[in-house]
Length: 478
Image (tube, rainbow, N blue to C red; front, side, top):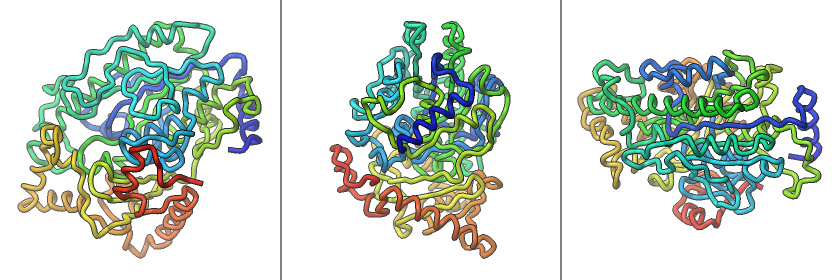
């Protein structure tokens, strides 16, 4: 972003009535692997989430919020940098951002904020993400069971210095597998209504029940965190955000570019600034969150005086949407998937205008194999036993066969009317009636890939992955 734009951004903040003398606090609450439309707020018909529902009634719900890559580490790196995966360097899970990347802790820290993180970190290098460690929440998303949580750490962090603004991320580990928390008896498997992108087998129902129990357990934590904020006396001067992160660890959600992978729940509450109980169709992406926080901070310290220098972001702030000045933000959101290290190379790229989604599978002749989800290695055998029942039943159940085929064999191009088909089960790419829309989205994806310096399929190789793990990124946006 050019310095002139940054000055304009600050001017815009002041013009919107935000005082440079009183910076708001920020609270970000993140779930872990929670498919957005499994929440009642987005049409989910099973889970019970009274705290998230109450929070939404007090704030603004984004109907169309997305992340670029439905993997834990890449999506969090995007959130904390305002940069797409190739821009910050973390385009594979369990890799890391480029060493020169400057993330949320340093950018907000320079504006006078204390920036802390409780729970799951899952970003690196530490020099790019020097969060203050805040205790009380488990950082291990695969622990069985999750460690008991306590609120003393976040209470102390929020109340430590009333004169200094804070930014606190509470990154929960539910409902990431293993699904062992909460009371699954509240969700009798035979009474559940499964989403149409999941094969209806007894084992799937059993595991979906446990997953729903974890959603409710996570919702309880959200309520406790918000109560702690209230007790700190900072609820009225804090912009609080809740996001469900990426999709769940069921086939067709996490590790995909489908809507149930990259669409995220996003709710914002800011008393006196954000109108309560509203919904917005503005198209936003994780890369937009950090620029929004920087805009909302309305710091008197200009970027020209910054020791960090001018910052370039792939995202742009949606502060006017929060303040009710507009219901439009982006024209497009983008997605990518590099299957390493979760399975053999299978690169996917995508773009959506909020109504339709276009996906390009760069190696369509290959099988899509995801080792964790398919129960092929280590704890995955215990955490994801439902996949084998899908394969077992597919020979006698045509619907199950189609779901297995959909997951493992994908055409070169896919086009979905996501607004009418949120589970994206009807591929329109070969429908002549949609040829014009297909061409438009195809061209926009080409433009974005070029702008990102994305080499396409050659990036998703074992050589590239090994280099990224070692911090030697072979590809980066120019």
